Length: 94
Image (cartoon, rainbow, N blue to C red; front, side, top):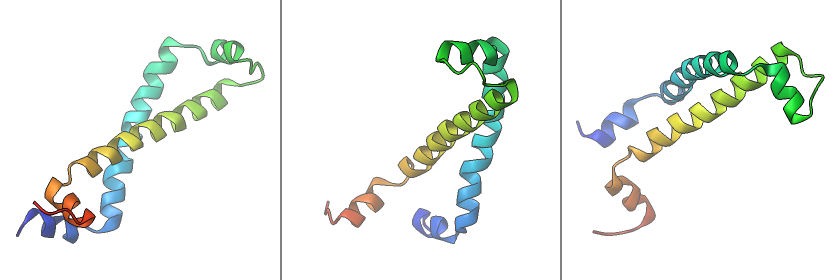
């Protein structure tokens, strides 16, 4: 069974989870490390959002880190496709 056939056998939900789950874990660690070094209240004051509470800042930070890491994971999955498969879809011949 070739690489292309193996990729077609993987269900779409498994592909989505293989991007979202590791990025979720990484975002959690990044949030902990970031807010260990930076106080959300101080960041809010620097950004001009004095009414921002800590829990709101933690939530926003977590979702921003999750978005960043899931984009990174998705791009990694996209770029690991063989070049031949990509070129065939674009109509290029070797």
